[in-house]
Image 1 (cartoon, rainbow, N blue to C red):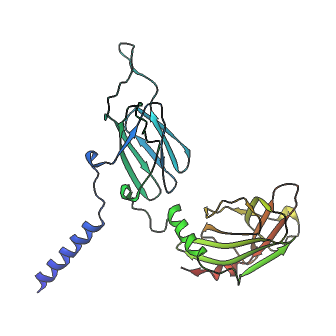
Image 2 (image 1 turned 45 degrees about the horizontal axis):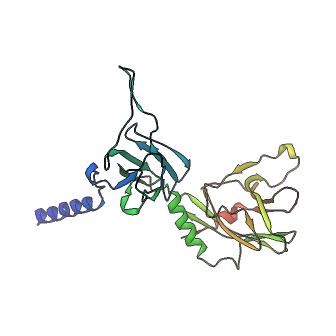
Image 3 (image 1 turned 45 degrees about the vertical axis):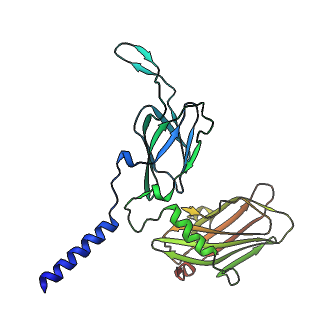
Length: 289
């Protein structure tokens, strides 16, 4: 009976390992992407790119934005250092130019770059990294990628929680409210709505978060600690009537002698600024989801 039970447990463990193990990549199995001389290939990632590796000097590239890798065939000819002879690199159709590796926050994707003649008008200029080409990277479970944070934020947006805000402030026909506070692992999500009751649209210069003293006797004694969200769902800088957004912070604490100050500042010359104080008790009441 013990032998049977042990065999059953062993088989189960082997099955689970097979289901969760990351498949090894073989060059011949890599997805192919075509690249042409004189034309940049843009690889678009669903989350910020952490690292790009090009396996050969025949390829060169950069990161014009956090989510896009720009790759091209190197313009410089191959120089024979010993004989000081310049020999242009010549490719034939379907030659392998090199291997492109893109590492995101939670995945690694690899492609085989195949040469395509520039006379072909169907040259690909950009590709999106597809889920089937991503291999997961084992990360600390407490760390979420921007893609995961966006999913959580979208789940919050789908909740209709604007009617009973936990804190609200009005000034100059503007209102700023915290609909709710959520916590997920070591992350705090602020669900906020801004309303403009005037006929003038609002151009956001900045939205500042800081931890400050509750009682400020002298401006020089005020110790203000700026807090920068690690993620926000919508980077919008302009709204006419209503604007709802989710701001994500790594877990923080502050004593009862301090408050979290939120300031919405319009572009210069308008003077329409609104600020709100948030007590730590509001953060402690955060919901989970």
